[in-house]
Image 1: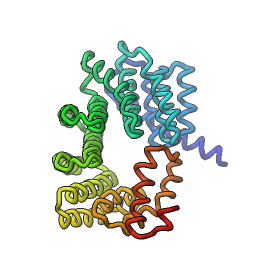
Image 2: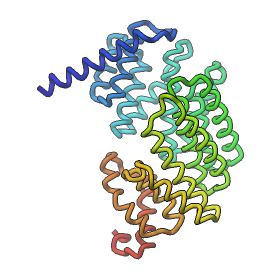
Image 3: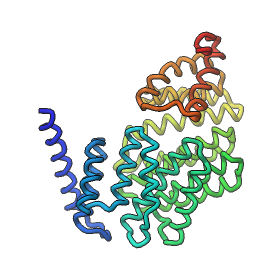
Image 4: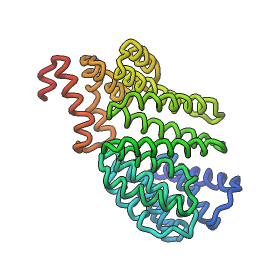
Length: 348
């Protein structure tokens, strides 16, 4: 029965993909079979059937319904969502080693692979490797006139993050500003809301980077842009309520942290209270994100209470305790418990 149920789900996904194809009028430099395979992969990915994604990538590559570039992109995508990030890196690196200059459709997957890989390396704090991925691809996109793709702005954001974290603040500001201008251009004809969501995520990355290096004035500037973009997205006919709730919570968390850093503790406390009114603030991820403000405000007991869920979150995402994760989560947890005079927990 389980096999039959899985087949039924898979068949329904395939049917949805075929309907998507029949209504698509976009001209692409691929065959109809390629378009059908791409749409099916998209449908299965949205349903989070990762085992089927790997099977389809293998099958479609053998049948030539997917190019090696697209098959490897989907393998990287799948392993990333399975939290096997090193394997994801390997497949995206294979995509970047391919020659896609004469294939517009493959180039889109090439750019997205570069964007995803750069952000993954950036999260690990591997700034040198991030730049080795992002710089040549952005240059290639500019030369080829493909810098209108949304991944171009994402790569600029990654470059800016590397520059900021290595003390090159002026170039970081230029990269971020250039990224923002390209995000704005992408909004003009955004009918699905995808560009708005991508822009909001870009604002989050930039704001978070400035907060981490305690450049609160710069963070405040980007928070205003973040809020403006989120408000605009909220008016979009296809806006996601869950996305808005989550990013609204982050907006308030960030405002609280920035205001605390700028010397406005009362305003910071109000922003934090507003964040707590969202659904996202009640989730495990939200509680961990809240600790950044709580630590800045020296609300040690509240921060220590929130950190209790860290082990559960660690297991949920099947994360390894890398040096980056130790620095980002375990050290603050230690400091919070020490500040709350919970010596035994701090020592543990």
